Length: 219
Image (cartoon, rainbow, N blue to C red; front, side):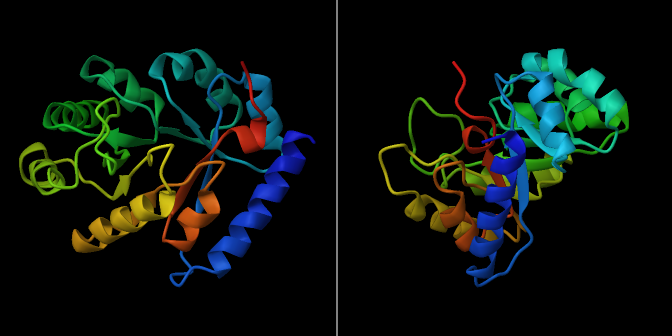
């Protein structure tokens, strides 16, 4: 199947999952283009896809500036861990950051947005499985970080993001994230990938991050 065919299939599945969601919320499909070249992105754009996601600032910096010149209406989301020393480049390159997970990063992002006069959509990443090797704050730490973002850093947080543990059913983690978002009045939920985005949508996801189901697996 081509990228165009994959996208058509994914969109149909998103529509069905959205119809089954009690919220009937709008859902944005983020095509995760990491490790795939600019031609693959162009093929997706030709099929009507305009929102993309990358894990690494360096890869985005090498791939996307020429694409933005060609397609000024495209949007780019950062979904991988962000080092504070890459915050300036992240603000320059991206339209959204899904992985705010510490006070120092929140402060740096807010400062860079002010300097560049550019506002990014920001999510806090919650480590719902409390995995040592994974980025994100614990659910218990979320109120403190959210308060710091809102009152000290001046960084507006619009949503939460999670990546459930591979070996556990994702439903538990998606439900927890949705409950936290409701508790703290955050409208956006970034959750769900190629294997579980339909479950995530039924539980309230507003942004799903789909890579291999669109572009295929690449070494």
